[in-house]
Length: 138
Image 1 (spheres, rainbow, N blue to C red):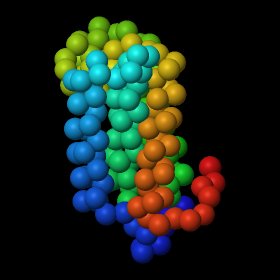
Image 2: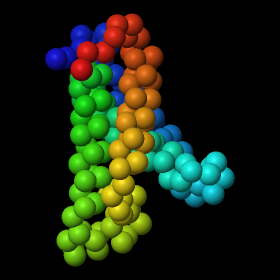
Image 3: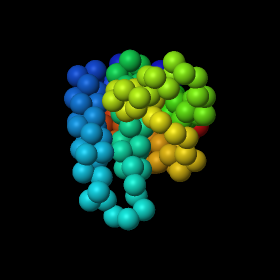
Image 4: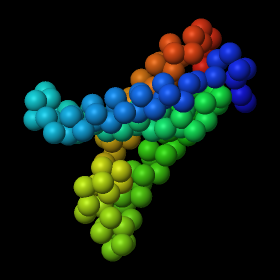
């Protein structure tokens, strides 16, 4: 299902949003010790999911918000569950800085909740950005 042309997303806005979310995500990892006790890396995980929402909107600017949310959650969940696979070549990638940032290091059920929160924020921002007033039907 596609939007009409008048509500198509700007790829430049998506790209700028992705850049801002990456900066916030890296800052959340760098200064994570300032988060309240118990949050750990979850703000960064939520921001990673929000970035995935932005990446999907960059490559599919006329997709529905529901599609973007589902694709983002599926991507995040697949990456998280891939952390249960401990192949030597995959672990070698995970031991690099970028590999750890993109693929993560260890599986955690609470990360799935953080991803859901991040995608929910993406849905709200997308609805505000595109001027949608209707409920989203998944």
